[in-house]
Length: 115
Length: 113
Image 1 (cartoon, chains in turn orange, cyan):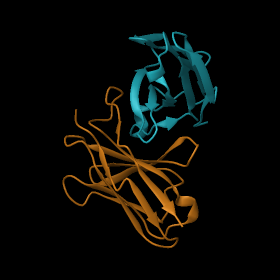
Image 2: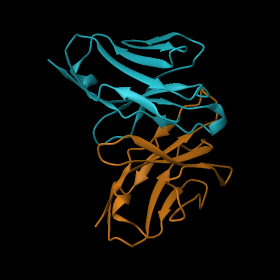
Image 3: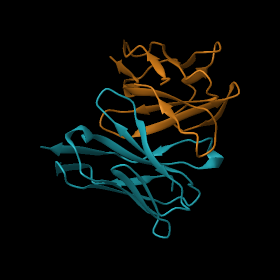
Image 4: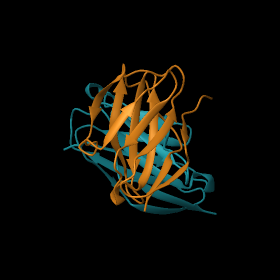
């Protein structure tokens, strides 16, 4: 079964540094998402991306965050100047379509640790 | 209004017993209610989902009950097994929101032999 793959599985970064988290969505999917999960808390929506532009973003997704689909297979999340509170598990997801019968498939996440 | 409330936070069930997790929502625009199962070190995986025009959906040992008037829904796991031990998230989304999924706070289920 096709999977969403994320790299790296664990990223350790100094506060203030830029970090790029990478995702390869399922190949024929058209909608892409980033979520985060702070340790012990619920999964929170960050951003959705369709047709090479952001379709929706949460209040968490401020100017420090950006997303990009640099080629036909990768989907990236960039945090420009990391803060301690950015430490979390970041999940990428993708879906084939927008309808209610088009579930989102999640990757196994990247654990981001900010020192 | 965007929140999905979930209880209990943790649950211990004997093997063979019934696990019940409850959720409530406020936003009546939600029109899709999935449940996700998450094992340690893994991403959430879709378990079962329901639309608000259906009161119950069953897939194997997993059943969602949906009460539209009360804005509540629940997951029942029949004949719970140790392999069901995981964190379960209820969630909600609406068609007009590019399927942004709003998650509940999660329930850590432990099924003991």
